[in-house]
Image (cartoon, rainbow, N blue to C red; front, side):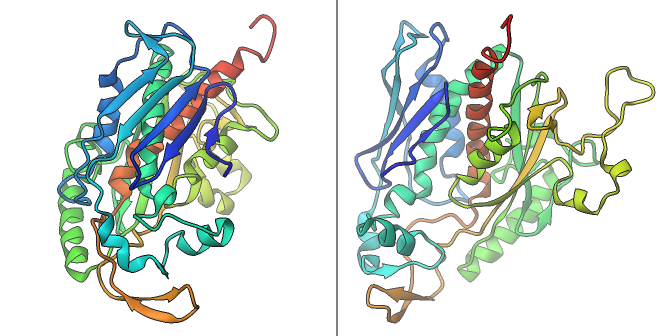
Length: 359
């Protein structure tokens, strides 16, 4: 099985299955001398853990650093991090061993490999994302040294749209105050009511995550096939439930005129653009503006109401999926989007040193 490694210089490989012994990652290419502790990783992992409105699988997600760190600093050698699984309930999946769950990777996975771990989806489970978040915590430490910050939030859940930065009601501080990671107190209350409604119906919801990156200087990106927006899009779409990404004005730009879409200089502020329709990336290279993008996530496919599904013989059966599943995965995907963004930017920061002389 290939495809488990991401990055060029700052490179990660993830491993493990949802109901296996442990999940983990190996980070290669991290520079020596970076201050790093278990608490740095644990802080990010805690943001991905289930809450009272999410699934009820109660994993503590306590990370262990096996190598690559000595006396609180990275050695420059591979950093291995594991998180042991401790609260899996595999019996919930016994009845689904020979059934392909709707909306899941069961059918395609077995078609490719001829075998699959039916317990919670195995490697295709959303639990795999904890490996990305652990690695992303290390990448964020590197970015912080360069004054780069990443903030993501739920900009829409179940069709309930939230205000954008600069609009009335938007509050960055509110994002981590509510379990839905929406930037508005009023929006959190509306979302809570909708989640209760969907839960009672045995249904689920999708949504959109917005991401804002500040402090990135111009010049990051490796055209033509490794453009910054191309790599970010690849990174974010690799998250299991993500179905699309747009930068800046995104699809709306298709309806603009050229003069409307072009980001022109401000008349009264030197070096500042009046708009950011490009999302901070031009020609695949960072422009020095804030990097802005949105990612759409589908509804959780595991719902509690009865559904029809194919079995291994091609027959149609009615199934009810048991287990502990999120009504909406969007809030828990917020730190995953941040992590994948951090991994891309850390990689490009290291690659940028090779772009010209002097470097």
